Length: 109
Image (cartoon, rainbow, N blue to C red; front, side, top):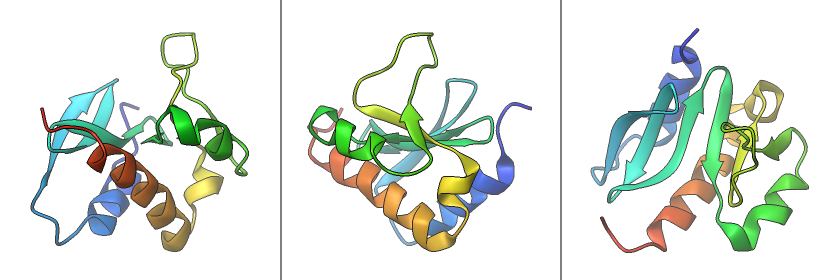
């Protein structure tokens, strides 16, 4: 399984109405980019969220979140959220908004 298309479609719906986003194939999944900066994405059956270094520990303290360790080493500032952590649309939207907020704080690429 490359990535969960159902979850990716749910993320697309959570982002609906925005014209400042693009999609890019990354990490064997799909990433959602704001002005060229990754905000969130889907890899296998997990949501990836770029929360930034300042909110990293806070994000990890949330249920169903863990360090994003795609390379075998944790990527500080990025977390995976298990399917249980984004089961409801409300929970998914909260995570997606965290990623958007961090990406919006970065200069456009």
